[in-house]
Length: 162
Image 1: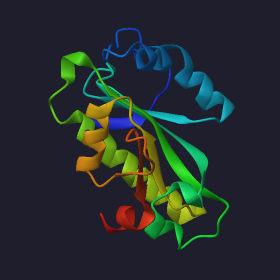
Image 2 (image 1 turned 30 degrees about the vertical axis):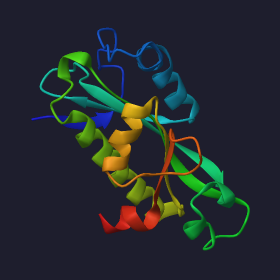
Image 3 (image 1 turned 135 degrees about the vertical axis):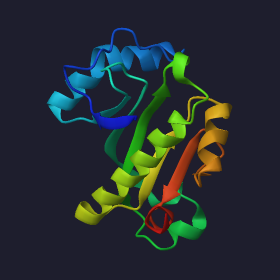
Image 4 (image 1 turned 180 degrees about the vertical axis):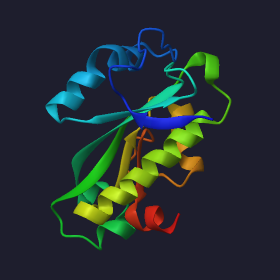
């Protein structure tokens, strides 16, 4: 049974390959450093071994109200607003097309809901790597937030209703 847990030293990062060099390098060389420094948290999907099937990274951020869809922006003051950023999400090439991306995304949304209950935020942001990734996020309720279709946003109202 797959499980999602915080990345730590027992997880084998060396063999992970999602097909995107920047994501592979982040997991292998940077994710644990960022955790130690309090910059972000990376969560990994594993099964019975400590092989990483996929991962995602969350961090806090600010967004200007004018950068979110106008319908939502009217609800907020016109300055920087708190949000969570889904900084990275990847599934190992060997385990793609098994629903693991959806499982990781659902967990990221769930953790965002928990953070909102403790600290307050307006939603979840993601910068998709490409158009295919953008379509993936849009299938789950994210909307583009600018003319750049790779920047997406899920409002807290949507997150709380899931």
